[in-house]
Figure (cartoon, rainbow, N blue to C red):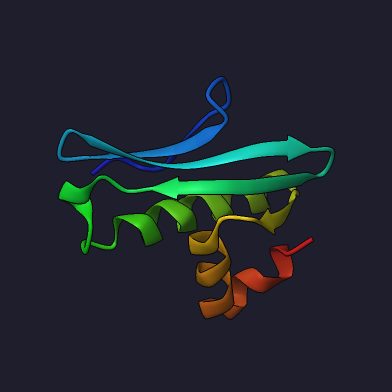
Length: 90
């Protein structure tokens, strides 16, 4: 599996696994990143790919000094379950 990559032209983070691509879409608003949708292909479901994708995206967001607005339910739930990520909330 590859690491999570930011694809700014497509406004999404991507994680490629087994020839499939999982995505976390976003839009930037000044010093905030708004996560709008996360999609994991059916072939990758149940393997922790979504969590790995979101963790990798949030690590990059932290490194960039941005705050997070989790409009995507999956990203919101991930942050709620991981106390170490809650300081990223806008």
